[in-house]
Amino acid sequence: MSVAVMRRLVPVLLSGAALVASAAEPASTSTSMLRAGVLSPAMPAPSLVLSGTDGKPLGLERFHGKVVMLAFGFSNCGEVCPITLATLAGARRKLGAEAGAVQVVYVTVDPERDDAAQMRKFLGSFDPSFVGGVGTRAQIDAAQKSYGISSTRTVHADGSYSIGHSSSIYLIDRAGRLTAVMPYGHPVDDFVHDLKILLRE
Amino acid sequence: MTMSRPFRMFLLVPLAALLGALVWAGFAPINVASREKLFEIPKGTYARRMAGDKVEILPAKIHLTLGIEDVLLLRNLDEVPQVFGPTIMMPGQSFRLPFERAASYQFVCSAHASGQMTIDVEDEPVMPWNRIRWRVRQWREKQAG
Image 1 (cartoon, chains in turn yellow, blue):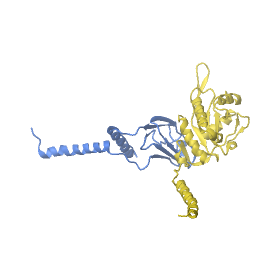
Image 2 (spheres, one colour):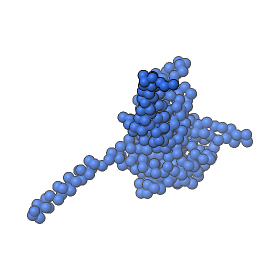
Image 3 (cartoon, chains in turn orange, red):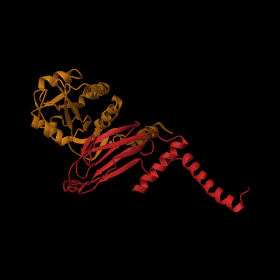
Image 4 (cartoon, one colour):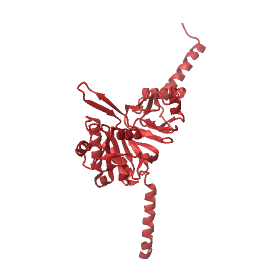
């Protein structure tokens, strides 16, 4: 075979191999591969009318182009919220350079105790990039209702109270659609797995 | 005292059939068409409940089995949003939730009159006795509709 023929043939073979490789690639970009629960069809995430702990209004449209992990909790939470936030921070760390395209939004269910400063301090201890959502009781109630979040206050003998609340993490894609919901308790690697899929979409 | 041949056959044939069924149920591989277990919340569920009907659409307890039927698929065909444990489903939306760990999961669920739902996820039945138990439960669930 002459060198000229080889020169013509190599690019053709390479492009053919690339085509075969792309066709054989598993459907990893599909949300059906997610380890989280998948909502279908994905619909626009309910909007939030809250204040952000970064001093700006907290509308989710601010984060279009990023994958948002949205969850609800409160700064006095003893167990569930610290575990959730540590998991989300761990997922961002594991993503490395891609973490810049992932935003964590954590909305308080305890507006009586969680003001912007309190939430900022709480979230900052896990990851300074996390943005908290605070507001009036009415605003928080509206946010909870739109995401189906339940919370129950238990008053203790000393007058203090704790709050039991829904603890799932909502995954919102780059286009602002509520795509999936990760129930509480999944490990860091499950988040990393799903975030990589959503970031590729 | 000796049993007559017809009487012996009368006893032995059903026994052999029962034994054969148990061997099959205990050792035959379990094949299912889909790993998804589908439940639908029908149109009008919320309206019926508001009218005072005690509507139970979903069973209070759902059994899933890892490796066989370990994906819960819910469809909201009602005209209002429905809360299922970790999320809210809009009308027309479905929610597909895979499970990877055997455990009992408690969820809030607005499609239940009680507002609660339990999902029991068990390990894949490998031992013959567990396979028999799994098949019996499947059969019962099918009979219950």
